[in-house]
Length: 638
Ligand code: AMP
Image: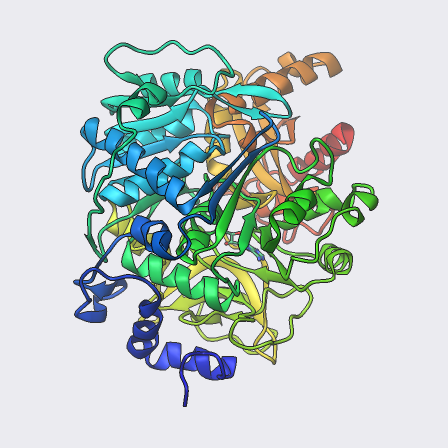
């Protein structure tokens, strides 16, 4: 049988990935360049820590950039478009290589070497991609922090990653208004216990910046000194870390998802071929941000590893008008586009002619991920574009899709409301959360993955193997499985449906936020005695955060004006500490939070009341009137 995947059924392709992972992944590994061949495809002797392509030496930057120089050096690699600053720049693979070498030379000059961490806090500008690729080139471990996060979020990440260098810019821009980054970064460094040696700053000329002597350095002047730099690739053992990406969990402390080099490169290459049907020379447009996992996998590394041009977009989907993304598809003949359901819901509200006026015939498929894809949104966009809409379900932890339809292997039907079937390499199951028994068809349980996790998934939680084990790997009845923390069902045809999180993580416009982090931030307000943050269903964003606050001095919120002013003040605290992305949609003042007699907060009951559902068994509630109060308070603020 030809095992290239071209003439296999998806069922056979998938089964081989599970039954014979070494054969399967050995074949997929041929899609990337290995400087030194690996001696073993998988070492799972220290389960659940999986080591892929042991002893193999490779490099993400080489595979993304250098590898394409000979065959398509003059072709577009990175297309950076900003409707905020009205700049548009196309970098060929050769030009991208030159810029990455310049950045790598600057990093080396600043004392950054293999294994050193570099924190990247940047807007969606080309220099951010240069920075990521330059780190990968010299074996430094990057940790990109989303530009929408503020000083406290940054400080916790600085303390955890302990970066030698921070790379940032004067400002981002949103809706034509500059969003200064430097003051937030300065405050974060002041707050953090760990002090980076240097801060490298890209000056976009958006807002004035004061450089801290000795510490801060200007990118443009250093770049001028390294125009001819040719920095050799550092060949890394496949299991060395490539990056850390922080994600929210059930505690206030974000987890550093640590990824390897070789496994990640192979997984991305395989996903680009078999899920995203990539072809070298074509253009890929992912509308995410480099601060999220989609930005890492499918703005920077994935498309470039597949030899595609990738589009980086800074700006709103509705500015200068709601046709901007479609104009980009037309201009650059985008074949594969990746976005989130929230963005599609925003575009659905735009006049239809903003879509029909562009020639979208290059587009072959639209991929959506990050949150549940509802049928209305899916049907609308599929009808409007006339191309397949492919839902895919995954997490920061996995780095690439867990569930989808791999149309590059076999044209299989999609089902509305379902992200699809388990992707090759993932042994997905639905288990009863209490017994660990496999659920039957259509029976709700927790979506889990049996180890080994395929290549590309998290190696561990950065600096904390114990947290990796205790957070993700449940032992039920002696069986160890990776928990996704999502509820789900599998139907009789094997299609999965995701039914929301089992933990306190909420999903706002496809962005994952920890309610505990928001609660901790709100608690720092001097008048807050207690707070509960829950995710409440929202038509546009999927969910929004709503905070219920018990005040130390309730009089401060007496009267509509005082209450509105205090609400604004508390939102300001979240903006300043965590960033506007985490700001609750409402802050509602109440007299008591519903708790059990043992003092456990009844978050799910609060959420149920907010969404007009049955709050469940009320006999365990210490003060049942607290829920009624939430209902009244909520209707008063709606
Ligand atoms: P993040 O780590 O920020 O990518 O968030 C991952 C979480 O987002 C998952 O655990 C799910 O709860 C949710 N999610 C991601 N993609 C989908 C999808 N296609 N359908 C439903 N939920 C999704």
